[in-house]
Length: 111
Image (cartoon, rainbow, N blue to C red; front, side, top):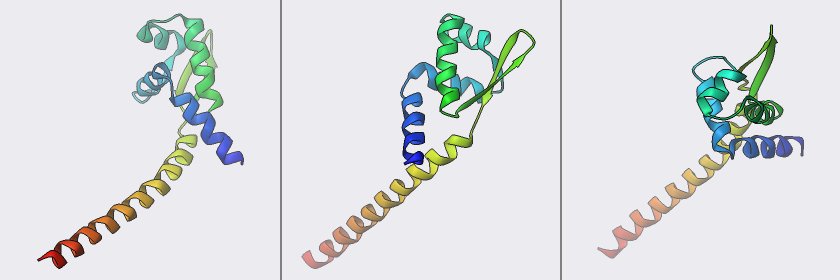
């Protein structure tokens, strides 16, 4: 159940375009909340709320450095998401392989 709640939290965090843009930017390297807010075109307070959601989901880590809050990617949770998606990807690949075999065999019997 814990993993399910963690996945729910990650997918909820990723459901917002601004938060996905923050992750894309942090993929280039660490940034301050102010830098992220400027790039997103929103207030520092508004961006801080988005960062908090990402941080609670384990996607971003923040650290107070002097008077600014530095943000960086926290990829630990993405490993869980990747594993969950991978299970379903393999399931669908097996189903598609089965369909391919079915249609190949059916094509051979029609001749």
